[in-house]
Image (cartoon, rainbow over all chains, first blue to last red; front, side, top):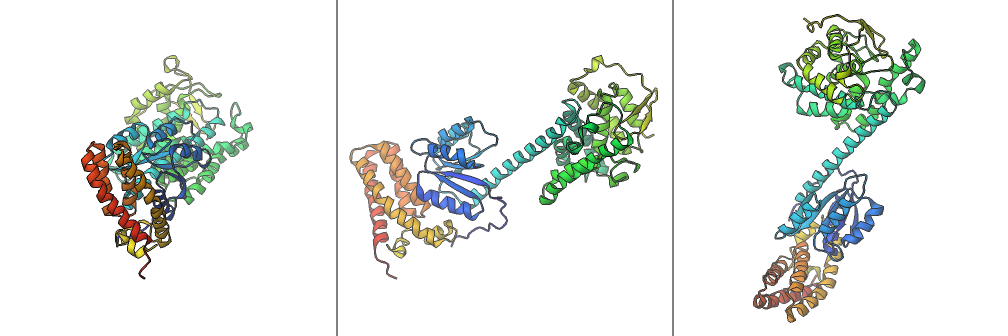
Amino acid sequence: MTGIPSLASSKTDGLKVLIVDDDPIALEILANFLRVSGYLVELASNGKEALEKMRHYAPRIVISDVDMPEMSGVELCRAIRNRQSIQYTYLILLTSHSDTDSVLLGLDAGADDYLSKPFRQEELRLRMEGGRRLLTLEGRDMMIFSLAKLAESRDQDTGTHLERIREYSKVLATELMSWPKFENEVDAQFVELIYLTSPLHDVGKVGIPDSVLLKPGKLTTEEFEVMKRHTLIGGETLSASAQAHPEASFLKMALDIALKHHERWDGTGYPFQLKGSDIPLSARIVAIADVYDALTTKRVYKEAFSHEVAAGIIYKSCGTHFDPDLVEAFAKVENEMRRIRFELDEENPPSHIKAANITQWSSPLDGKHVALQSSIPVPCN
Amino acid sequence: MSTANAMSLIDADELLARCMGNSALVEKLLKALSSSLPVEQQSLQVAVQVDDLVSVARIAHKMKGTAANMCAKRLAAVAHDVEQAARSNQIDIVAQRWFDLKFQIENLLDSLSAPDSN
């Protein structure tokens, strides 16, 4: 007897599926398999009926036969892709082995995958898994983007602040990828994750009152204490999701960054006064990216500093505010940082920026003063 | 209806596995097959008699799919032959293979309607 595959490990999360076929026997067998596998299943006997059901059922995956009366599977694919939809629908076409023309037409019309009839259970399981992975990625990226934009809408930073942060973070992480010291920690996936999650660093600002968040000028000691809570608020926002989905490494990294990007290498940061490598690497990277961005952009309390001045402040803070390794990495990718700043600085095109005649810089977020030197020191020498 | 008889023309183990061990679903599908097969047979016979090869190919294609899903492998194979012959405009082969297909259909319908020996 043909074995029934184990479905215990399937993670279908009750995903909604619509099956479209004019053969009721094929519909029943497919629907039964998917229901046993944990999917929520709706049925339609042709493309027109499928479109009608999609208005109310909103399936994430549609599995459709090709040859059907009223509206074919290929026409259905085209109609689904032409709809205005807030979420992606994964489309799988059911075809016979000899029907390669239909496969090509279907893929051209927007199908994501195809499956030979009669379907093999293991093949269908794997195809569905592929679709689920793609939809999960879409959900992840949409969630990150939405949260980051929510935080950004409450902030007075410029529109490209988040874009610059993730580009700076990516450049710094990419540099570390080639260092033997970080070979077990930083790989291509780490770089991708920090690119995705660094825009969430200030997500906790959604919980800071306008009177503090939008205050033009320096914060009082009390206001600064309120502002510091944005790290804890961001941490709380993300920790529930991270605990519910321990397999989602992007949530863990997002949590580390939101909660700890204001910690300082020497243990004088907040909220936990973590020291050295007790601060997650992702947070140490975003710390330097965030400060560099704050320095090189115009704020209500200061003009934009030139790259040279900003770099000088970062070198000066080596081993105090910043991880010495990251300051060294920053020195190696300075040209890249400068290029990103130039390309994404919509407020103050760099050609118009004059190096401000500033002898001291004080961040309203940490209240610490850094004396500037006239020449740029060698990092951590 | 006799499940036991029908199962001699259908791979019973495979069908039960395709139904995830759900024997009630197997019964339901056999009943659906015994209802739909005579209708398709009639449509196919008319199309063959008037040499409507487009309809022959379409109906045989659908019958092939249903048979394959029901693990009725012999029926699926002969339906495939009729479909291919129709698609390549081989009227003589369609007529020839149609008798094989008719025999398979009637055999299966007989077994589905015969009293269960158990």
